[in-house]
Image (cartoon, rainbow, N blue to C red; front, side):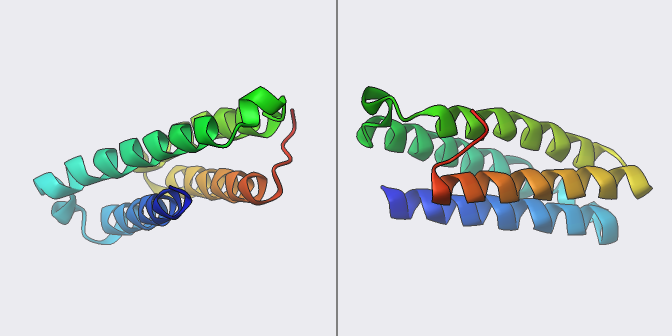
Length: 118
């Protein structure tokens, strides 16, 4: 299950960066139905695989779940920055994009180290 989760982490990141690039340089391409549906499917499968890992990893039973809460809280910020990125233009878009990338990096580091701010 971990391998599947990692695949969806990469697909989600690539999808987000590609949509930001397309929105800046070829916005007409984003009107295709695949670009409206695929990101939601990828992110849903990513979340489901993450939830599966939480319950299969015995982290909740062991009491070692502060890092999971940290990841979830920052995930909410990542979603907010992502929405703002896709709906904004100019400097606001790039600021939100930088915020989203910072959240992504934090989530990735917490996933590796299992240490969050909780």
